[in-house]
Each structure stands twice: as C-alpha cells, then as structure tokens.
Amino acid sequence: MNKDYYIFKSGRMRRKNNTFYFIDKEENKKSLPVHQMENIYVFGKVDFNTDFLNMLTQHNVRIHFYNYYGFYNGTYYPRSRQVSGFTVVNQSNHYLNEVKRQYLAKQFVSSSAFHMLRNLRNHKNYDEVASIMESMQSHLDLLDNVQRIPEIMGVEGTIRQLYYASFNYILPAEFAFDERTKRPPKDPLNAIISFGNSICYTTVLTEIYKTHLDPTVSFLHEPSTKRFSLSLDIAEIFKPLLVDAVIFALLNRKQIKTSDFEYLEDMVILNDSGKKKFIKEWNGKLETTIKHRRLKRNVSYKYFIRLECYKLIKHFIGDQQYKPLKAWW
Amino acid sequence: MFVIITYDVGEKRVGKICKKLKEYLTWSQNSVFEGEITKTLLLQCLNEIESIINPDVDSIYVYEVRNPNHMKKTAYGVEKSFDDIFL
Image (tube, chains in turn brown, purple):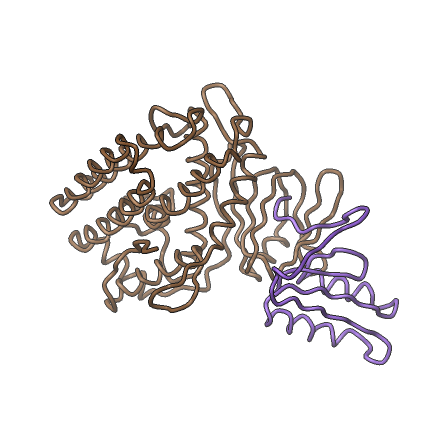
C-alpha cells in the first residue's frame, strides 16, 4: 500500500505545508503525500535540511542514498521505535554460541540453494543446466557435514558459482558472461545483478527496521562494523526468489536491452532508463501475492520478508524453531 | 481503494483544503485529488477536512473505487499531473 519514491533528478527535497515537496532544477514543484510514504530512494543529487529529516522521523519514512554508479551508500532511518533489548540480547546469544550460529547459517544457505534450484527447474531441458543442477545438489548435500562458518560460506560460494554458470544457457546470448564480477561489474549481466542485489538489501533492511531485530548482528556473514549484515543474511533467501526472477523476466522479454547500460572505462552500469525499468518490475514483484498456507490469506512477497524476520525473532526467544522460507508454489 | 475527491469551498478555505489533501493524495487538477488510500487514512483525512470546512456552504465529494480494475482514466489535452514514483 505505502509507496516508495525514486528520485533520479537533481533538486531539492523540502518540508512544506506539512508534506514533502520535490523541487527540481527547473523549479517544478511536486507535492508528495506524506501519509502514504514508506521509502525514498535517492539516485540523483538532492539537498535538504533538518526540517525535512524531522518530518521523515515523524512519519517513519526511510531515505536510502545511492551514488552516481547506482551503488548503495547508506540510509537515514528514523529513531527506531521498535527496540527490544530482550530480543537483541537473545539474537547476540545465537551469534556467540557456535552451534546455534551454524544452525542459522546453514538454514540461510539451504533456503538460498533451494530457490536457486527452483529457478533452474524450468530449464532442465538443457543438458548442461540439468548437470549443473546435479552438481549444485551434491554440493548442497555437503552442507550437513561441514561445521565451521567459513566452510558453510565456501559451500554457498560454490553453489552460487555453479548457478551463475547456468545463466549462459537460459539468458539471451548478448547477456552472456564468464564469471561474476563485482566492484566494479564488468559486463551488463553483472551490472544488473549488482544493482538488483543492492536494491534487495535495502528492501530487506526496511523490513528489518519494522521489527525488533538488530540489523548488525548476523550469522552467515560476519557481523562487520561497516554494513548491516543481517540484511545480507536474509537477502540470501530472497535474492534468487526475487532479484533473479526479475532479471530473467526483463532480459528474456527483451525489455532491458544493451542500450540500457552505460559503458564506462573498465566497468558497466545500468543507466537511468535501465534502473527505472528494473525498479518498476521489482515493485510489481514485491506486490505480487501468494496465498499463505498457514496464515490462510494472500501475502505479498514484501510481507514474506517481514515474516522471515518474525520467524527469526521467535527462534531467538525460544518460541519456535526457525525454518526458512522454501517457496512451495 | 482508489478515491477521487473533489471540493467546492469558499475562497478563504480553498488553500487550506488543498494543502490538507496534498498530505494524503495526488493533486491531479484544480480542486481534484486522486490516489490509492486505505480506509483508515481516508477517514482520518476527511475528519481533518471536516474541521476546516463550513458545512453550510462548502461541499466535498468523495468517489470510491473499491476495485481498481474497474477504473479507466483517459486524459484529453494535457495530462497535468500523473502519479509517478519516479522523480
């Protein structure tokens, strides 16, 4: 229901008449309904003052910043009203206890791999894809035997590498790639994957903020000081389910073409029209609903992310053991 | 649900109503607002508007579309403002 706004132009965001106004360089004013707002994504150059930030806090709106290349820079998030020391202490306990941490890390990886295999399911008719799926499955089986976190990460890494190798068979030829390259992405497919993943992280982060979870204490990824690593953990589950599905749809329908990319020295990024196409499809995906088996009502993909957070809280406080989402439809 | 709100109020109150509605919906034409809104928010909005208007002379119309599939909007001439998530 609540809307996200994406600012690509340069201009000024301000508080006026108790709502938000965006004023672009040509002095065109546009009012944005504050009561309906959930997130603002800033891709352009925008200035604002503390009045505006105060208003964001009042209405619990988050603002995410991306740099010129479309890489995530940071978030201004309102003073959290959802604090629960009890949950945080228990969450940290699950990090500190090696056995408990491994359990969670393995759950994230297994769900992620499950969704990757699910994506490839429809492409089994290619022999190459079928054999890749087999070796992914055999690596997934190794998960039961490994113990240490770096080993779990290793299993995850190999599965993902195999998975990306299968992309060459299921995507149009002009988007073929040799290997996954990040920082910077070196070809169009890498660019769109990178952009999609960073949008996914912020979506997950937004949902985490609505719960009692602490976004910095993570299990599969090492909680580092620079990133909200819990959102990386949860995003593992949703990246194949959401980001890759959107990429497949956009590329196979030929909606995103090679002209939607910007070729810079040594790197490739999506240009504004490409970003807009991706975001439009992404928003549509998040709003898509599925009938939930236990809740017995239609639940959007976005809400599935929040349900994942709630399940984790229940696990932390010892209410119900965490079972990750495995898409059953 | 999708709503269209039109208003015809005394000159003094036009600005006030317009500003209030801008917090909730998208301004599509002079004295016309439209957009997706929840029931609760709509009630809250109308409550606030009721305290601004003079019920003896002013009028506010609210058109509700429960199922957005049943709505088709065609613009002739210039489409002044359309609801866009990209700025």
